[in-house]
Image 1 (spheres, rainbow, N blue to C red):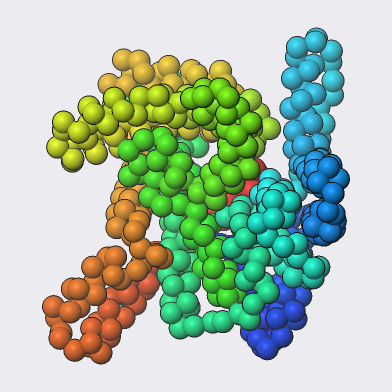
Image 2: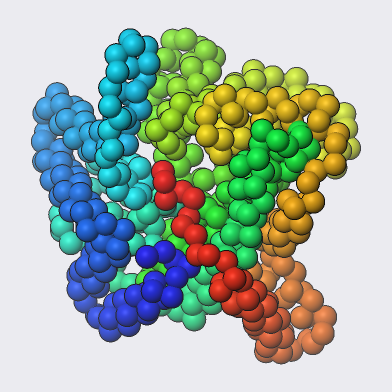
Length: 489
């Protein structure tokens, strides 16, 4: 059951009505969320809720155990024990095949491949549980005493499968407080849900046709066509993943929760460092707090080399987190090399760009950042490291100056509305923030009455929503309903 399905719309409508009918009883609302989330998760496989339930119970008990233990040595032992237990399932189910295959390849020993059923979203909710344990250990949050409340937080279906990864310090307390639903919250939610559906059904699912063609025929195509395919894949991945994140945020707000924004116009990033402040923000923050910072502190005697080592290890792990294949490790290392370069050349680059007009320096920064990120993304989509290298070799050859296949060129048009809206709303608090779009000022020029300004703004926003609904309806039946790409991670 995915967000872009009629089945989910019916499911959410039922949950919404039952949930808010119990608005006076916070614990009952949380219980509705737990039951609904486990039912939602069972649609992928009947065994997945069993694993999730065991993880929730283990995290809950370890959190209480750590907080009630006063001896620091015992607390540290409990921390390591809990991290081992919580991460064991993820490592075994997702990475045992990769580890056995790598050992077989190095030793020459033949091992049969493991065919394990990996729960959807296991990487995301395992990281949520690990972050919670570390926060409890560090005293940044009190361990949750109510199991139903904690289960509602960790299993909440809007962000259960592919995030955003909920920070315990900001999200968990919301499950303890009385929930509220406002007209403004509904308006924001509707905008985010419609825009998320538009990005998935109209943009991502359309672009995927061109992406699949280019990668399926990569051995026959020239560099220009392959570059087009990789560019389309970058926009496909963004529209698919950020579309889910927008919907997750909108659905969570309809249930009274505020979760962090996960993407913020990464097309405008002027460096790879800035790119990771705008792309998959919740994962970046998780790695920064729980991996990068501890490494820097542990290697503080290394001076500036501690930063380079922390970047290398963090992004190497981040790459492997995305998938049980060494190609993701290559993708992560490419990003780490760029960030290390930017760290050591920050002063020189700032001095160089300060001599240019701001628009020229911005264009150069965005061009090289986007180009590097797109070429690195090749390894994300290619079937192997060797295929990724071959695609990039062709792209960087004279074949780049040939005419690309017309079949894939037509899919570029779907990137235009995505770019326009995402760039305009990057500083807004939510999608279709009329203040950010300047429509409130435009309405003010049409009428001087504050009441009329709000009315005109409402009319303009409603027209935008109608256009989105029409496009979604138009393509919903044409396209085969595809799962979200990040489900595999």
